[in-house]
Image 1 (cartoon, one colour):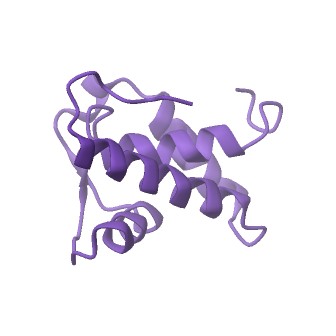
Image 2: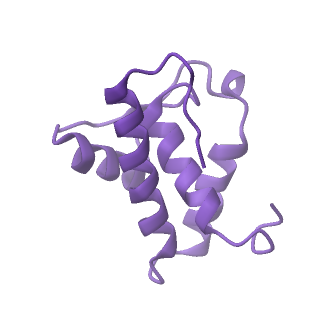
Length: 103
């Protein structure tokens, strides 16, 4: 799935790809609670206006971005224009079966 924005740099595209992979791995882990998966699916489906330029500190997302970037971070912009956020939620959404959460 090519979820890139046209104007993303090569680094932003790489960040998206790595965060998407991390989201897929997290969603495929049998120890990931269904409620956590549902939370991320809800984030993926939410409109950016609902976030109101918020930062999100959801641990699986923050951990994935920190691992990918090698930086110690505490939050990620809650926006589908952010490659890390969008990559992670796209990866989760792609991995979870459509019939599981009514997608």
